[in-house]
Length: 532
Image 1 (cartoon, rainbow, N blue to C red):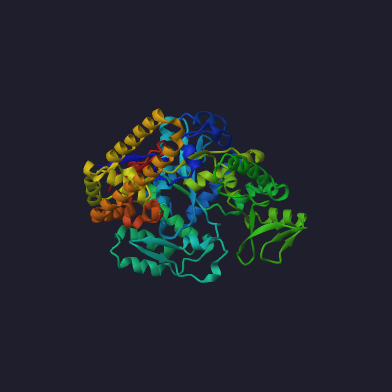
Image 2: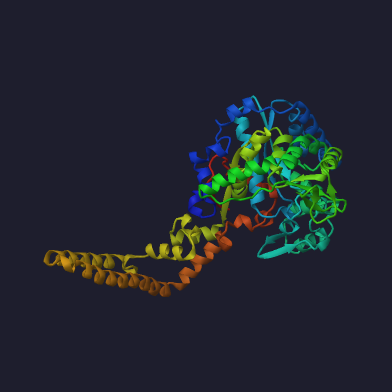
């Protein structure tokens, strides 16, 4: 059974900032709370204060959401019922991940994010038995980027949601599930396991909007682990966050904090993931559009005629907090205020932008969570594994770009397929000649160095030409090599970014989930190559 770890740096899939974070570069310490480790949570647990009132509101919201969808009856839902009950206790904390409402679960890495979150809660529970830890999946119900969630890839085909253009700019959670039955009918023709098809069909045909349907899907997939799924766009939860929203809009404190941190990270040669706006909030209009709040003389809602004075804005915020929607900068703060949270599990892009936020969190007086990079997997079938073993290259070689992979392959061929030794001997001979010239007439050394370097350049080209000759002889082998690489990292990216859960389920989705769960190690953030 293959279980092979590749360091993130050797995959060329992660930004420098994330690689340095995984390697716990001390230079990043000012931008985080703690590097992830079991021991790091000891002080966090002692100092994490979560108001009893917020806990009461959170539990009321969750109870209402779950009961309205009828998801808590039956023995199979007992782990969720238990965790909902535990959230009432002052010694219960959450670990959280979040994602957009991609149809049919979207890219496979979303499943990995959830499993990593579940495993983190389990590890913390073993290490700190005096506390309770509940995994939470935060649904990005207010996100309005329809083009990012309206499709998924399966078996080399893209399945797209046939929905009218009128949805653009609206929070996707409110969208009707109309049209998704068309995709279900297409999937039925592909011999998809009935156990998984039933999950999707039940969700998309029995629930009216995408938020409820998505909650239903993840509930059915992960209820045995007690995963709690939250739709955060409620007036009750938004009301808890009113004072923070007010400061952000009126005083622009988030903008100042993130801008300063971004400048520091940029000066350290890190790429910046997000840039703050002066006001980091959207407003939900009467038409259901999610538009930016901008400031001129008054407060203007972008792409509309809506204007507010300060007094009118504050009145609307107090009366209808659900109208005010945090953006990518303030959404993490909203999450940490309404949850008794300790950690956030995210992908490379998420970790990068969270690292920009700590100063803004501190300005608002909001605790900053521990950041965990989700686990990543490369899944290899037995047939391909035999091919890999025959070729003999280490798995990290396949993350190299094609030219370097080709050279790596040629280098491990028998010695008569290479000319490095001969070229080294020729260069040594040139160096010997230059030494003799120096002993005879030092004034001629410069001229001879130039002549010898010209010859060395020609010899170096001969090395490349010889590689090309060998390549012509082994074209079929190289074709297989590149085909394997494309299968492992299609388009040069980890396959988890394009594959879908459906392609991995043979009989029951829980079988695959348990397989990944077994091989998930939240404190080892290597890319894990597994035989499947």
